Length: 224
Image 1 (cartoon, rainbow, N blue to C red):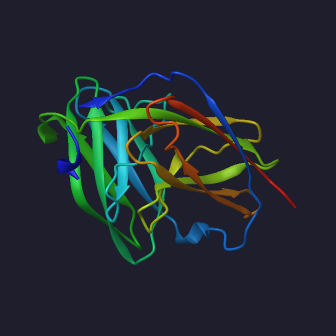
Image 2 (cartoon, rainbow, N blue to C red):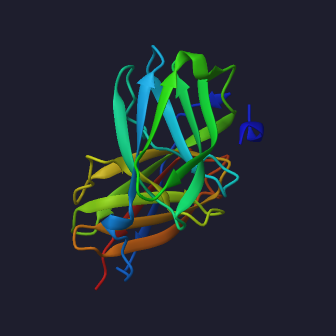
């Protein structure tokens, strides 16, 4: 993945395109027993503003799992749930600090039976992060139920990958989560699981946004 790109830029939203998607619940909800976890620890000496955990079978970095409003402060740790199809699967990891230092780990294997852990230190920094513009994607929960897990994966991957909310966070009814996504990956698969185990699965196409708007609102709701 290091060769995909060359200076990460946070793009400011220029407007909002409202996309209202009515999503029926479906069977086959993710079993929490099949989720693994990965912890990220920041020991770089500076705050981390972007954090990516990209499925190894994807050509894209995908979403910044810290979101548009969070940072991983120096000395802190955050844990996320991950979902992958095989006993072991590989992921590529990138963290970007406030001085544009990047910390990149490729082919990081996560296996069933044990939690994963990654520690970023100043010794791991590379010269510069990849370059791509970012869009802000706002996902609003209008299902009537609390969302426990929310996966947003590049469409070219066969994995759901990482839960966009850390292990302690859920998305209440009416709340919105704001994600930063690469404006170069057009299609994203979204999979949400509510407190009753119902699932909401749909695809977000950002193609019409690129070059015109840098912010999109997605509202997903429950239909009997």
